[in-house]
Amino acid sequence: MKHITCIEDLRQLHKRRVPKAFFDYADRGSYTEDTLRANSEDLQQIKFRQRILVDVSKRDLSTTILGEPAAMPLILAPVGLLGMQHGDGEIHACRAAQAAGIPFTQSTMSICSIEDIAAAVDKPFWFQLYVMKDRGFIKALIERAIAAKCSALVLTVDLQVIGQRHQDIKNGMTVPPEWSLAKLIDFATKPAWVSGVLRGKRRTFGNLAGHLKVSEDITALSTWINSQFDTSLNWKDIDWIRSIWPGKLILKGILDVEDAEIAAKTGAQAIVVSNHGGRQLDGAPSSIEVLPEIVDTVGSQMEIMFDGGIRTGMDVVRALALGAKSCMIGRAYAYGLGAAGEAGVAKAIDILAKEMLTTMGLCGVNTIAEINDNVLAV
Ligand SMILES: Cc1cc2nc3c(=O)[nH]c(=O)nc-3n(C[C@H](O)[C@H](O)[C@H](O)COP(=O)(O)O)c2cc1C
Ligand SMILES: CC(C)CC(=O)C(=O)O
Image (cartoon, rainbow, N blue to C red):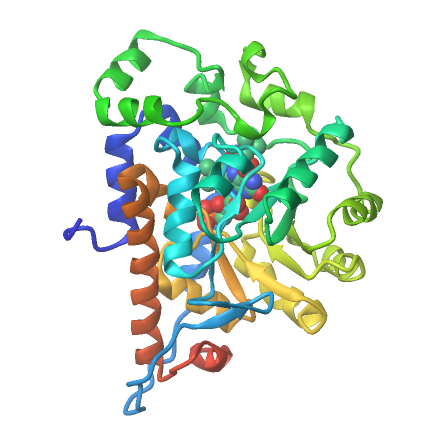
């Protein structure tokens, strides 16, 4: 991997090694993909102030996330179907995160189950919740996360209905997959991926096994999600979730300042300013566009996390400079996983860490706490 120098290199390798349907599922966004593009483009518009002749010999990325020490202000975001990017993908990603000293968030829509991951790693991980119509099942799922000693619950609030991803439909992303000659040839030319997935623990959603008849529902992923997810979910349900989950609660998917103000009153410890990586409301603002106003309004009441479009360590520093306390990354590590499993996720984290350290050095700061809008050119 010595010629892999940036996240885009991992993306290219992921594209070569993983069947097109799964690469596209990770890579693409909803409808016109305007919001997907805006996430990265708006970050790149933000310019740094170069500062010189400052002693930057003691640069340090360490910080705290929800009061816990972290090696850097990064979190692996919940990403569904990681086990289809690489066999046992959730376990590999979690191990890489824990080795790097940062949190991993398991998606409800994972291939490995909560218990599979808990049995394979030493430290607690975070669990992301999607609320489905079957509330008895959701209560049991939260109780499984408690039993597995998950250390935070990330409630995703921006996917009551799913934004259409045109490419997933064109690729026949169904549960189980729709087969065609082209797809068979695609799989046959990726033998390492096939054998990795076949050696993996599961081939369908591990958390849902035995509860929802996933394997019997031959339907587009989006149709299935729209039939299972609870469109009636609303602010009152946060109390219900808090009555089951006693630990740290993070609301993920907030883009509007009024929603952030309501969120601050729920007792949640943090919010993630996020548009779901441009996979949901196409035409929504980029996450970075709305971050400053949300930080100004509720930043003193709760921890503000950020995601959307981060492809470089420079992007992480930009979001921190505009007030985020930490950043989640989605595709940046999913590309690493598809490219090279655990080593690929470790490489993605390492690339971002080194880019952050260099950016901090050239902006004349040594610590994460020193990063504020002073590092930005106006
Ligand atoms: C392939 C893929 C699957 C995702 N699955 C989930 C999920 O299951 N739950 C969730 O809350 N967010 C999910 N997300 C959104 C991410 O958690 C995160 O908000 C987004 O990826 C951030 O944008 P970025 O990919 O540009 O870093 C997913 C994102 C991707 C790319
Ligand atoms: C299976 C999906 C609902 C997971 C997700 O959140 C996404 O693909 O963006």
